[in-house]
Length: 203
Image 1 (cartoon, helix red, strand yellow):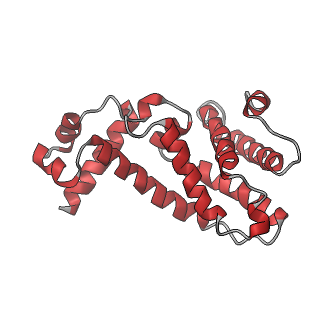
Image 2 (image 1 turned 120 degrees about the horizontal axis):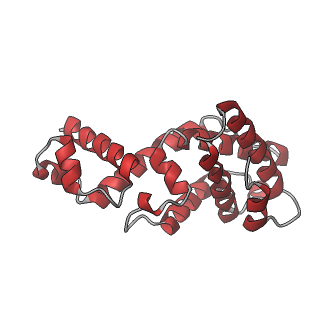
């Protein structure tokens, strides 16, 4: 049974990566998986349920991988270092999965009726809030979860240049961008998304 479930998940993920979520039907997943339609419904209620499971798997893997590089901060400088490591860890993880890349880039073909950009953003906020609540109170005051996730989305928009520049250049570009964004979050000035978009229009 587990093998069939895994087969459906892998097949659907492959189809979603290639064509987007909206274009793929359950019939196409069933046909490509070479299973009976009844087998699909044994594990998943519908396509939304299947898509949510794929996203949940990404979430579990991502949180485990990213948090393994973090440590309890004692002061602002250590918190800034953690925010930087978190951004770099996140982009390295997301770069492995086209579905996540396209979602962070706002490609509507990779969302579904239930999972839209607002739900995706709010899910990211809730995930960060869990980490935020583990910080000392004096450090919690320095971070606004909504602003942090806005920073994430802006930073991850650099993925659009990943295919067009050499790997080493892209790595240097994302590292420099992460440093500037983290410094901006902790500065006394207000950083607006439009201003940052102008600053990071191209590598």
